[in-house]
Length: 496
Image (cartoon, rainbow, N blue to C red; front, side):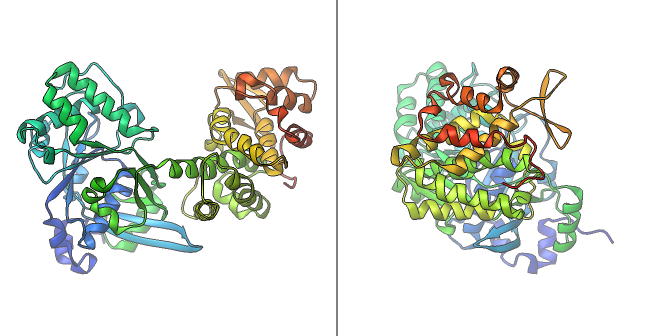
């Protein structure tokens, strides 16, 4: 017997699935969102839906599909309703929940529905813009904001805001709160600068420029939640049977969620959905959240990925199930990285964040490949970990022994032994693995010419052009790294 498809009709027939669905589906539109991707549906749209269920925000989202590829058929067929499976670890306990999300009212394609999109600009209640058009999307291009539609996302946004400015005669009250979620530091100011430049190029109305600058709030934000792409067929089938319906828009995410937004009281008032979940944080400065994520989550990933991979493991979950690698990960994060974050951080807050990260690493439902974390390994080590290392030595001359072990594993991972099709490959247990790093050729030359692994470590650590500093000047660090360089490059049968 085939399962019914998720739809308003199904909710009418089976009200126990979502008892309040008629009220939720009748809420007015308050947000326009550029992007249909799973991250937006799994994070911002999740928060809006949760707030609506609690009777807090009471507004729905008009979603704009900005690209020319694909269509909106699945959204249309299900009237934009989708299910969200939330699976993982929280506070040490396994979570496996599901919600039906009714936060999206319409899905419009920019290529064919531009007139309808501009009509939204004339709706006083729609006073929030959310976007995720990838990092490439926030770029200044030679766009025509009078086109139907403009090509770039900033061009579309400029045209949308111009339409709103004209509709409400530039009133201060018609200004919008604009929250880009693209993974760019300072994404709010960057988007604002591009919109202002587009406006000056195409409509040098000083009133419009002044309205953009003074009455619209472009807020930097940081999003943090693992929302993989479309689940595999086995997962879809299992979840469909569990839920009792078919959903072509099904998404799966981890439990952890964070949306840090830079703003003051006005932004808090407009983004009232933030009250529904502790995962939305609105502060005048969100650098702390960026530093915690960069140094503890990303930094630990970088220090542990090569070591765990060479230990014979393939995923972060496997690394957390192995007693030795799990101990390394927990201790390097909480004992060495957390106290040395190069930013003023409450130690208790750093420890709490670190333990949340450890729960995320243990998620039994997410398969995060270690080999994928090693992509651009050298740049990641420099950006994520070297500032923490330097700050450690500002505080203490004690050698961070686990950091040194992870760094040595990085050097050993970066030893090419096979050249194939223009690529560089290391070797684990007799099998090649791809070294996907712009510095692969650099390490190939260093490993070939070094007199020994210890000599290789000395050369790389002292290379100011690579690290912008001489790491051999840090008391005891080079010696600690060198002490691990005599270990076998493949450590699948060795202890950590």
